[in-house]
Length: 351
Image (cartoon, rainbow, N blue to C red; front, side):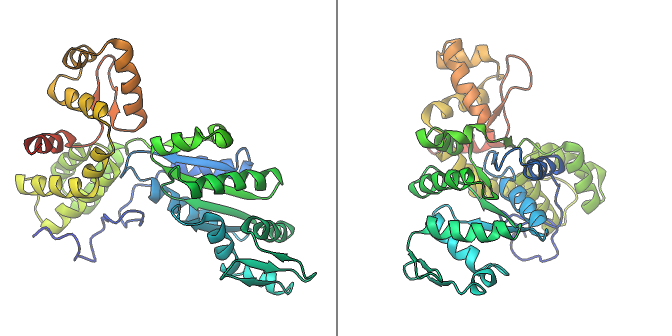
């Protein structure tokens, strides 16, 4: 009864990155990013948040808006590939861009990437080729937005971001929008040659607004009590909002029965929680378990873990930045992810 693949009419979507039919737009965040690029107050913008918080959907939404402008070209890159070579290739074949070079009798070979100029000069490294392309684009008053989803501190990213700095210093109109987990962005920023990323504006995606979630559910299900219960259940977590909506829509039930909640727990653990939990270190896990087993007060957590105040403060702040914990009332901590405590209890059963 709860198959999540078959109903084409379902307005909710659990595929990461694809904009669902029933979608709560993050208008404030979208406007901030676009205004920053329009004002050129920064050419780089970072989006962080816990897995499933909507980073990819926001990136896609901003990309779609900018791509509709005639003076912009948007290129999306895979962070696991050779980013510079991929950028050169995609920029060359992007609709309307290859014509710029064909008209100038430039030829591009992609076996070993090279560019032969009309002067006979042969360029064989991606950065030099990219500079030629960007010079041409700049003359034509076109801007380039590069988007990279889920960045990590790998060798490809370090090479690319270092080259990107060089392009910015040369005053090329090239903009960069990246998403990533807090710890991955932090690791990249800590590289000695990439500290300019610290100056880049950043949005840490927070919970969705409960009122928006409620009216979204009410619009689809036409049941105020069900919409209220569903809103409370998902606790503002973007992926949970989509997943629970999809499950309830396909179940055709009008109440959050145990069958639905059990299936929700199973699906969200497979989609998100198993990965999130595996990325937590042992101390993070101990603190999260202590929150679950106490009233969430700092005093009780410190007592259970035998931490002093300063030690708890360090780990607490990191968990808050990672989006796993919040301090909604002074001296207390709670989990941000809905029914995450249920997942942890089940994990403990089989440890």
